[in-house]
Image (cartoon, rainbow, N blue to C red; front, side, top):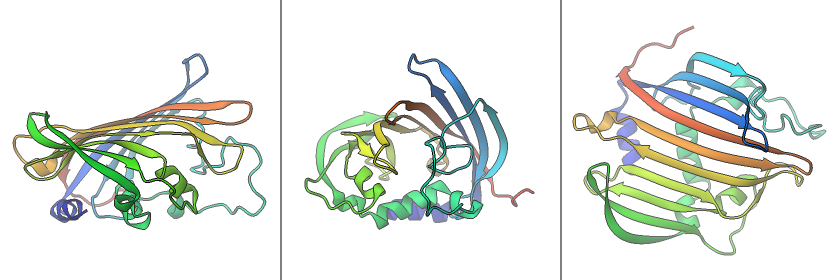
Length: 235
């Protein structure tokens, strides 16, 4: 966390371009819908990314309205529409808030594995698995309490150069009828022999959300494409 906050402060004069691509597949693995979003992210800015390009073919569950209930049938009677500001945030900022809010560092059992080389540099390798008998009062806590994975951390500056995370058992989602049965996530930081602060990255995820009579299968790819001096937000 200290490393992240130090880097976020140092990135104050910079912004980066990122691309998110999502595909939705049927039971046979055929792509039935896909979308691409390009945006500009300003580290440290809690506002949502500035979208520069959006493309959608077909209907992607969980994306069109930004509401997690979309595509699941009738919403709960007490639910209220969320405002755009409530639905859209700077995801990097919200991820950091989640680490603190859900005490993720204390939620897992950590183990140091043999050191390894990753991206041409020496790295510490850590594995983590959820501690048993955790109290999970919210959907998010249930989800985090079922994750396990590995991290490769640079020995030179403690950057996370690679991470692999997977759901160990199905997790109830927003109603009892919906479960996340598959979640696999990978992240990799690309080498940069120049300015190590401005390193590009790529991440991918595979998710399967299962309902009584059907499943939603999606694949996601996100890349940080370039850094540039920070400019004003567009219209």
